Structures are given as structure tokens and as C-alpha cells.
Length: 583
Image (cartoon, rainbow, N blue to C red; front, side, top):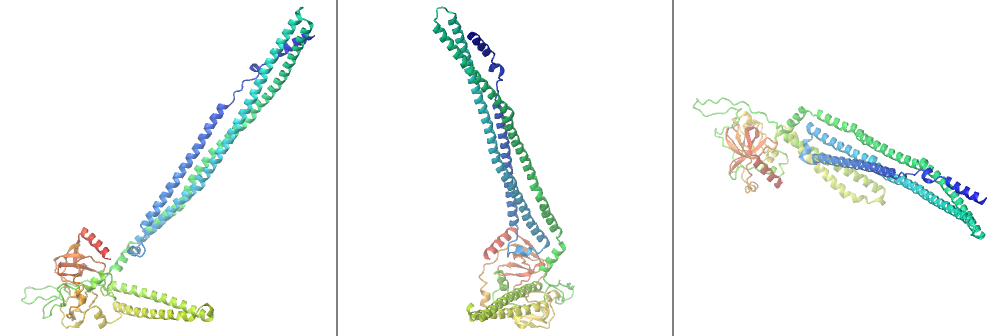
């Protein structure tokens, strides 16, 4: 009976399937995890590369916007400068509008940079950090699942080896028992001991079998879950993560285009405004502004009469001639002092201050200056009156509420304002009188105005002056309608004249050719003959007069229309530099 039992156990052990035949060798997907890890890291690198690309684009947009703003600022007119006056022309106003629109144009590029930074760079940077954490978590779960199945595999291998060992031990114990039982020389006690040992080994083999079977079932279950549940779930999560990354970078590229597209209408509007400004340029209006700004009010000279040299008589010049007769016993007007012409009205102008009544300017220019001065004085009067009204109200408040202040404390200031207003009103009356005189509202200049111009005029019955010089306006402001009936008195030299004699002569900036004969009859002018070549020492500054020099002792002003000027560019630049230094 015992022998049959041992034989059954032995045969049963032999029928137990081995791992090499029944249990498939598990190939862990470690290589697949490595490939997926490399691929997902490459995806993150692509995302970071795109972030860097967008960031550099935003920097370019900011730099471009900054350069546009600096360019617009560079060409903006400076306050309180001559450039501001130039912007009354439609062409320069259009240019100013272009500068302003370019400033707005630069602002749109700043908007592009800001939107790309907030909507793309900032969002993707945060998403990359989240993506790295999620990727790390998924691969951690994958490694954990691999480690778990490897542990189960090791347990199964240990259980299999133990079961195999116990089976071999039971087989050897069974053979030893059979040998002892067949030997007649062995005692019964030794046989019994061998039988018990065989039974013990058989029981150990049974226990190992049960343990191996249980471990095998557990491993197959874990392996199934690993293959069909854990790993697929992890791979699915990695796939979803990667697909979200791809979708996100696609959305970012779409946003990249939309950010640009959003500002296109505004940029188009800026360009439309530039076009509109260009179309608003009115060449006729600009030309009229130039005419109004520089017209002198002079009438052109009349025709020159024919001079008959066949008659043995003194040459005469018709009333319309540009030249004055120096015969008929009329002495040429001279001024006391040195032979050098006194240019004191113009020297004052060069130093930045001209006559108070602007008598050194042609009639039209003088009228504009006087009108401008009247407007400025009226503004000053209004400002003083506003201050006086405010102080008066404050005084009333102090009177009603003494605790708020002393009403007498503002009396002194009110008195000062009253005096200032009275002075300004007198100034306005004075300039309005000069303005009325220029506009022809007064019949003739008063003796006081004649004295202010620096000349005493006397009536003379001779009529030998030409029509052109009847309407001539001298640089010092003496605008004589009937110069043919006037002559100039000699004026003794004064210390005032001498104070300018020691001044260094102005440098030559070019040459000029006299187109017509001009007889300088007034202070500061110089006579020239037609075709005469002279030196230019000061350009026309908009008043219709050019300052010239014949030699070291003879210089003065002539009408710009009477000469043809040839300026030396280098000398002109030096002259302008010296003029700026003197200012």
C-alpha cells in the first residue's frame, strides 16, 4: 500500500507542467518605454523650441516698435522753434500726421508683442511645466508596474525551483526506502525509518506543489493585468498626453497668426490716415501762405524814359526812373560822422532787437509784426484781468469771512495788477496807432513817428525822383509816398553811431551783380550801378533787403530784387556758425 502511494506521488509529480513548457517567457516592454520616453522628450523639446521662437519674435516686434517711435520722435517739430512755424503748410502738416500715425503703427507692433507674450509664451511655458510633471508621473507608474511584474516573476521562479528540488528529494527518498525494504539484512527499524523519511519528503513535495501552483496562478493573474490593464492604461495616458501636446502647439500656431490678424485693421487704418493726409496737401494754399508771409507791399518800378543824348543838355531822368538826379543844385544827402555808412538800425536787428515800431521792415511785414504784438499784449491784459478778478473774489471772501484771511493783504497786489493793466493798455494804444498808420487809417506819419525813424523830413518843390523811388521803402522803415518833395537834413554824428564803428566786419559769404541802378538815399543803404560786382555779407532774412560791401569803408543794404546773388556755400556755412555762436 505504501509502495503504491509513493509510486502515485512520483508519477503525479512527473505530470506537473514545468515553467519552460507551460509558462510563456515574459518579454518586459522596457525597450518600448525607452522609445516612448525618448519620443515624449523630443516633443517637449519641440515645444520649448517653439516658445523660444515666439519669444524672439516678440523681442523683434518690441525693437521695431521702439525704432519706429524714436524715428517719429526724431522728426517731430521742437517746441518754440522755427520748425513749428513751418507746420502751417499743408505738406508739413501731412508729414506731421504721418509721424503721428507711425507712432500709432509702432503701438500696434507693441500690441503684437504683448499678446504673443501673454497668449503664447506665458501659456506654453506653464503648459510645458505641467507636461513634464505628467510625463514623469506616467513613466513612474510604468516603471513601478514593471518592477511589480518582475518581482512576481522572481517569486514564481523561486517557487518552481523549490518544487523541483522537493520532487527530486522525494524521489530519492522513495528509492532509498525501496532499497532498504528489499534488503533482508536491514533491520525493521531501519526500514521504518526509511519509510517515514520517504513520506516526509513526499509531503514536502506536495506542499511545494501547492505553493508553486498558487504562485503560478497569482503570477498569471498579475501578468494578465499587466498586459491587458496596467500597461495599456499607462500607454493610453502617454498617448493622450502626447496628443494634447500636439493639439496645443497647433492652437498656439493658430494664435500666432490671429494676433497678427487682429491688428491688421488698425494698421490699415493708420495707413489710410497717412494716405488721407497726403491727399489733403494743397499746393495752391501753400503757395498763397508763402505769398502772404513774404510779400513786402512794394509796387514794381515804372518804365524808364528814353534819354536823348543828342541834345546838348543835361541828362534828365523821368519820374519813373530808378535813379535820382543829383543836379539842379540839390546836394546829395550826407550824414555826419565817418565815411562808413551807419547801419545802426540793422545792427540792432542782428543783435536780436529791432526798432520798437518795426520800422525797419517792409510795410506788409511790419503790419503783421504789429498785429502780432497787439494780439500778445491783449492776451497779457486778459491774463492780468483774470488774476485781478480772482484776487477780487478772494478779497470778498475774506471780507465776509475774516477768519479765512486778511482782506487788506491783497490790496497791494490788486494795485500792482491795476498798474500793469494800465501800462499794457497804453502799449496796445501805441502799437494800434502804428498799425493804423501802416494800414493807411492815418493820413500821414506824425512828426514824432518821423523822429522815431531817425530822420527829419522837409518839403521840397523839386520833382526829380523816379516813380520807383517814390514808392521805395528804406531798411530803417522810412516809407515815403512823396520822396520827390522831401530831402534829408544832415544829422551830426553822435556817440551812439561811434559805438558800432569798432565792431569787426562781417565775413563775405558770396558775391552779387547789380541788375539795376539803385541810389541809396536813406540811412543804412548803399548806391550801386547796373552791372557792378559787389560782395555779399548778409543774406535776405525775409524783409526784402540784402547787405553788401564794396570795400572796407562802404557797405549797406540794397533791395534783394535789384541784385543777383552768388553765395559761396562754405563761406555761408561758416557765417551761419558764427551767427549761432553770437546768439
